[in-house]
Amino acid sequence: MKRLLLLLCCTASLALAQTPTPSPTPDISLMVARLKAAKSVNKPFVITLKDGSTVTVASGAYIALNPSGKFTNVYVFEGDDITHSIPVYLISKIALVTNYPFD
Image (spheres, one colour):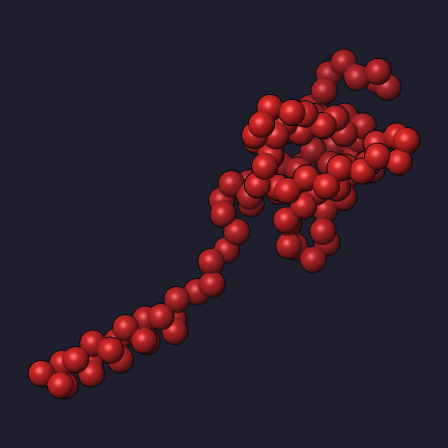
């Protein structure tokens, strides 16, 4: 009985030691990929948050992502020194704008 218990404990600790660290959730990874794609197009786009509010990005030059790969926040710069710090997990949709005043 002691050998079985010892074997179970060793097996469980080995399984925990080999468990990989979790990667970012698929939603965040997908949203970051979409943000990068929208930024590279360099046209205006709208970020819609889960609460329904929106932030318009004039072009790819007005948005910043963390270059280290830790995508926790996105920074959007607007006129009059307004900066939005948006947690990526709050973004629900990204859409290109077709009729923007600067087109």
